[in-house]
Length: 449
Image 1 (cartoon, one colour):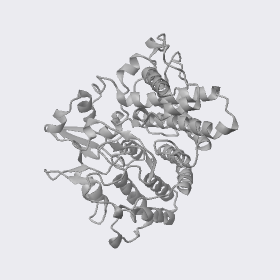
Image 2: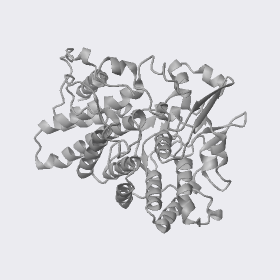
Image 3: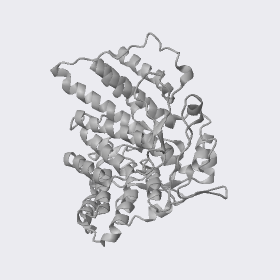
Image 4: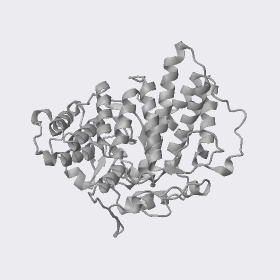
C-alpha cells in the first residue's frame, strides 16, 4: 500500500508542472510504472500528501506592507526574484522556477485527478459517505487554489467590468492536451463559487484533522470569496452559516506570552490548516511595520503574543497559527468573525456588528481591563477594518485587502526604502496585479497582465 501511495504522489508531482498549460510537453507520456488511482484509499492518499497540498503562494504577502526589510537584509536575500518582488519591480521577478504559481496549479491538477477518478468509481452505500467527503475535499482544494491565483494575479473583482477583466486559467481537467488560456474574471469567480457550493453539500461537518476540509471550512471560504467580490449579503450569509457550526475562539488570556511561539498549532479556531513561506517574510528577516505595531494598546494581548522585540528595538512576528517560523495562511474562526462584523456594518446592522466585534475582542484583551466598545455608527466600519488588519496580519490577506480597499477609494499607497532609494506603489497602480511568470506565457496561450 505504501509503495502504491508513493507512486500516486510521484505521478501527481511529475505531471503537475504541466498545469502551467505547458503545451510543448503534451506529447510526453507518464512513466508507465506510475499507477493510476483505482480506489478511495488511493484518492484520499493524493489529498493527504500535505507537503504538497498545504503550501500557498506567498508572493502577495511579500508584496504587502505589514513588514519591512532593512537594506542589509534585502541585500542578503539569496534570490534576485525576492529582491525585485520586494520593490514591486515589473521585471526580473521570475528568473527562476515560479513556485508561487506552481503551488496552486499543482493542487488544481491533483484535485482534477481525484474528481475524474471518483466519477469513474462505483461505490456501494457503505462507501458513499467517504466518496462524498473525498469529492468535497477535491472541490474545496480546487476552488481554494483558483481563489488564491485570482486574488494575486487578477484585478479586484468589479461586477461592472468582470465580463471583460482578465481572470485566471481555469483548468477543470487533468488532460494536458487542453490549452490553457485566461477566462474572464466573472467566469473565474463563478467557477470558484460553483466548486465551493458543491463542496459544502459533500463535506462532513467535522474533519478528522485540520489538514482536511470540512463543511465549516468550505463555508468560510465561500464567505471570503463573496467578501472579495463585494457581495456583502452573501458573505454574511455564509459567515453566519460557518459560525453556526464552528464559533470557537481562543482566549488569548490563557496563552504564555514569553513562549517562543505562544499560539498553539491546530488550536480550536483553525478551520483549515495551510502554510505560506518565503525568505523575505520569514520572522528572522521581516520586521513589523512600526506604525502597525504601535497601533496595539498595552491591554491588547496581541501586542505581546504576536511580536518579539529585536536587539535594534524593531519587532518580528511570532504569532503564526502554525506555531513556528512558517506563516499560517489557512482559515480560522477569527477571520470569519471579522467578515461577519464587516458585512453587518456595511449593511447597516451596527448593533449586531458591534456585538460581534466585542465577542472577538473579549478574547484578545486583558480580562481585567476589557470593556465592551461603544462607538458611533459612522466610525464602526473603520474600527472593524483596523482590527481586521491587527488580527489577520501575515496571513496572505493584506495584499488583496489593499486591492479591494483601493477600489473603494481608500487610496492606500505603499513605500519601501532600500539603500537610500525610495520605491513607491501608488494606489490602484497596475503593479498591484502581479506579473504572471514568463515561463507560463511561453508555454501556453495565457496573456500577461
